[in-house]
Amino acid sequence: MAEFNRRLLLSCIASQTLSVTARAGDLQFEDITFASGVATTHSSSGYSNSNYTGGGAVGDFNNDGLQDIFVISGGNGGVLDKLFINNGDGTFTDQAAAWGITAQHKGKGASVSDFNRDGWLDIYETSAGPSSGGATPGHHKLYRNNGDGTFTNVAAAAGVNFTHPSTQDGWGSGWGDYDLDGDLDLFVAGSSSGNNGSKIFRNNGDETFTNMTQAIGFFSGTPVSMFAFTPRFLDMDGDWYPEMLLTADFGTSRYFRNNGDGSFTDITFQSGMGQEENGMGGTVGDYDGDGVIDRYVTSIDNDSFWTGNKLYLNLGDHQFDEVAADLGVDDGGYGWGALSVDFNHDGLVDLAETNGGIGGQYTNEQSYLWIQNELGTFDEVAIQAGMMHFGYGRGMVNFDLENDGDQDVLIFANNQPITLYRNNLSGPDTHWLRVFLVAAGEPSVPARGYGAKVTVTTDGESELRVITSGDNFLSHSELSAHFGLGTADVIDELRVDWPNGERTILTDIAADRTITVAYIPGAFGDLDTDGDVDGFDFEALLDCMTGPGGIPVTQTCQAADGDLDMDIDFADVARMQTTFTGSP
Image 1 (cartoon, rainbow, N blue to C red):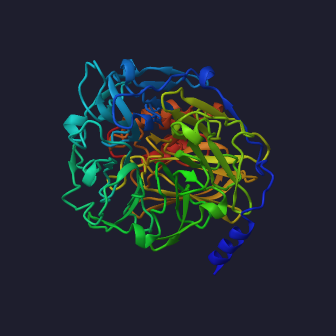
Image 2 (image 1 turned 90 degrees about the vertical axis):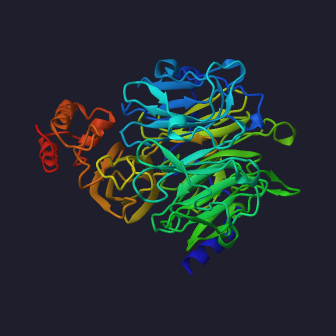
Image 3 (image 1 turned 90 degrees about the horizontal axis):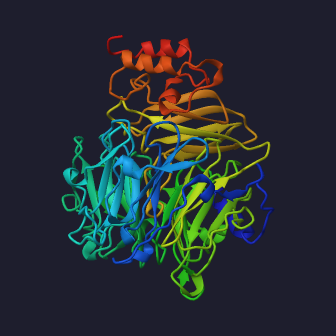
């Protein structure tokens, strides 16, 4: 009854407008593309739907506590992909060549994972094949992070370099543990007839994968050929087995329930999903604050026959209520990538969407930024907030480029420059918490906690985030759980529900910092993620004991603060001793 009353209220007030000033602070974005050193231009041609491309990913690829940027070039004219390593001062340096990213190919989309559980983030990149005159043949890339400042493309050896005999196919990709064995599996979205381009690969645990698509009859109950773009593994019913949310064009988006036995069932129409006519991108978040994850999908808005973006509120038991128009987030023009972030730190999840058609009415249409207000509807404030993007936007990602607490935005455009917007949120009531997870010593949980649900409670109010490796549209955001806390400077309870059913609870956590929560028991103390807690880990902890100057921002040192008191001291040494497994 309470949920029904909420929806009735939202439908009645959807036409009202509120002040667009963030109640937790003043929100303003600044274009720092050139100042940060990431200025580069996407260029693509010569393959099917090349005007749809433009993407990339962010991740801490060198484990220094700073997010780096991978940018897909598109492959036209022999231009190579970029790997911008974060210098820690608000600038980046392209080190793609030094890291071994030198293939000349027609790149399309990217996702990030630690697929081999070695503690280093890897990159999967879909491709339309080698570029004209390219010296390196190939298709999709799986860049294994060697942990020494280099990548090696192991896609062929791993069995994930092709998803279709045509080198044209393959769009977005996403990672998730669909069989709950602790290894990250891979889904690649494609657009070939008969769904021959979309594939689900099971991780064998030895840096190889098995194509399970036909063996489990993944598409056996799907009568249409999908033009699939954007996949995401995510548990939507609380049983920890992740569903597959697949966004696709021409009315073919699908929702696949995970049956828990290694198979999936298409329940799109029974669930209320799949109502978008031209699904492109997608994102997820708890938009109504009821403790379950909802879904937002971008599409095309046209008053004559296209009905725009869709927002599906999760009612439980695989039932969803589509409310985008009621909440004011349906008209996004020609929508592509999308983000779910609390940009202004008021505790409410906001939405962003990048835009841009190929000619016609959508040329030079702005990207959108919808800030959720206290009534539960959204106010569009992109121009006022400084996010003035009018290009052919495609992918977009959120990440904290300076570790200052607020989430910044990078927009990838088709055959145009990328744009990096720094979030300059200001004001007294803009507290926050940013959480990363590690579970290297626990084989039943993916190494970075993929699939885990993180909940913070302050003053009796709770916020839910999930760690999910999903596609926004050919792009992948940072792997954190980010919370805006408004006036609260202390978190009463931080709860991590791990996908193996275990739970970690921490209390009285100071706000305004980035923390790393390790899986307990067994994982704390394994700072070098080799599966043992030994003398090498003690040495690493001692190196992090810097005194009152603060904890170094590296992932190792963040994980060494086992009691989360913002000080690495002998209490942490004592705690490490309880999990000691090797020789000192």
